[in-house]
Amino acid sequence: MTDARRFEATVLPLLDAAHNLARWLLRDAAAAEDAVQEAALRAFRYFGSLRAGEDAKPWFLGIVRNACFTALARERGRADVTLLDEDGWEKLEARSPNPGPDPLAALGARREQVLVDAALRALTPPMREVIVLRELEGLDYRDIALVAGIPIGTVMSRLSRARAQLKRQLSLAGLP
Amino acid sequence: MNDDDLTRLLLQHASRHPAGDGLRAKVRTQLTLQAASQEALPVRPRWRQRLALLTRIHPGIAGVGGLAAGVALTLLAVFIGPRLAPDGPLPDELVAAHVRALQVGPLYEVASSDRHTVKPWFQGRLDYAPTVLDTPALREQGFTLLGGRVQAVQGRPTAVLAYQLRLHKIDLYQWPAERGSAPERLQRRGFHLVRWSDGATQFWTVSDVDGAELERFAAAWRAAAAAH
Image 1 (cartoon, rainbow over the protein chains, first blue to last red):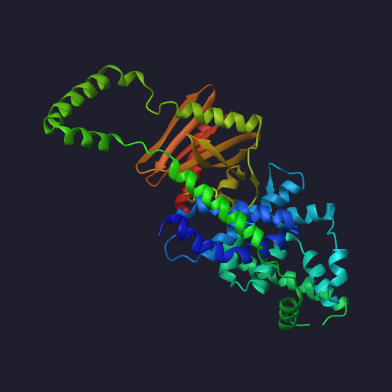
Image 2: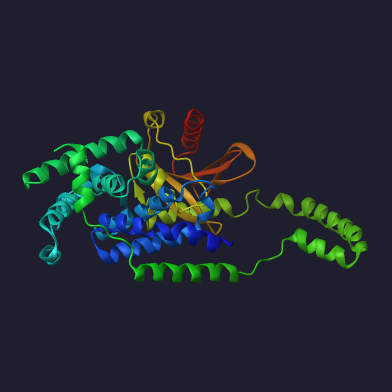
């Protein structure tokens, strides 16, 4: 099997997870598609760095999240600097508040979905990242640490803060 | 609400965004193009293969060729060798890259006070894993990690870490190497360079701080790497 074939067999099945992560991080359909395409090309170029027997999912999702965070920084007018620190994100978030539920989507969707999506969108990207990877993609702590490039202890503390914020917001909205 | 209630809520109600057929098609197309462009690259035969080819034509050439090549190499080494700088144009290229980064930027593409955010940033951008250090020992000696970037050196994407010492910027370039070597100081156009190798990685550091300070940085970094 050629490298290209091996790559397709390894990475194409991961596109759903990749796109879900990108879409949740970037909150924009076109930007998410761009980020996934960019990540796929980059992954192909560096396919050799994936060791034999290494799980491709955290490896590829790590490349996807890097593409997303670069795009997020670019979108906020900081083309040359990728701010990855949580403090940095909180400052940026304060300047450009979360857009809230999409009114068109809200029309057809069920109330729970609108509320849950809005609560997820209200998290800062680093917190949204760990929640999406844990709760929607079902990754374990070790893989989340690999994807986000943070220690496992940070994964756990970030997850617990994100969960607390989600519970608070959803309870206020009268869920479950 | 406990954690399980929250997990259930998220699993049941959060929107999922699977990749659409359009995206799949785009990714496949790009991959095909990329693979095709890589295959189309002409591969230049290495000199060993060329020599092997030559000897296959006439076995006699191997002996004669070897002798002639030996004589030519000796002459080259005696007459031209000492005039060439041992590192060729590399130090000049590194100084130019350092100046370019200072002038037009970016000095760093990932800014961070934490090596845990610098290291993963390199993931997927390079075909090797650079060592990223930001230890208390380095900070105590005044060397603060500003961030990292990828820059072409000798036509290859190369990991660069940017450190700060007071108002000076120090760039640290690193790439895979096979031979170890002790630190050595050079000077080009008013900039100082210190290079060393730990046997697996070649390091070059460039800055406008004075030579002794740059050697102090190299020593501190090597000590931090050894303790890492």
